[in-house]
Image (cartoon, rainbow, N blue to C red; front, side):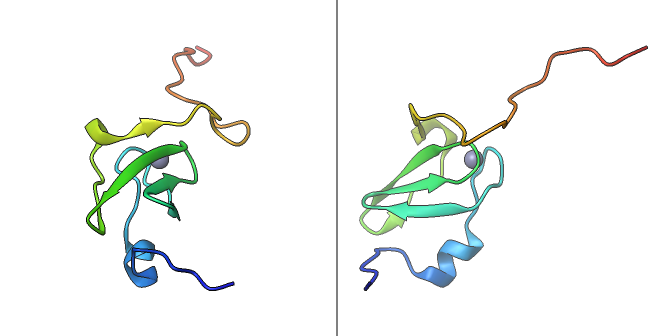
Length: 75
Ligand SMILES: [Zn+2]
């Protein structure tokens, strides 16, 4: 299958999610984080990796990913 992605594959490998530093996958006009599932818009072939621009996916993390643990550890 031919990948007609906007973003250069080499560049994609360098880029990382600014929130969790997970790897990003190109999906149409978005870069989607593998780990936290945030979506970053691609505007004019430029990925906008800003936390303020990110859209949180409704799907949620794939499995077992825990966010911001607040449970105190054992004393
Ligand atoms: Zn992420």
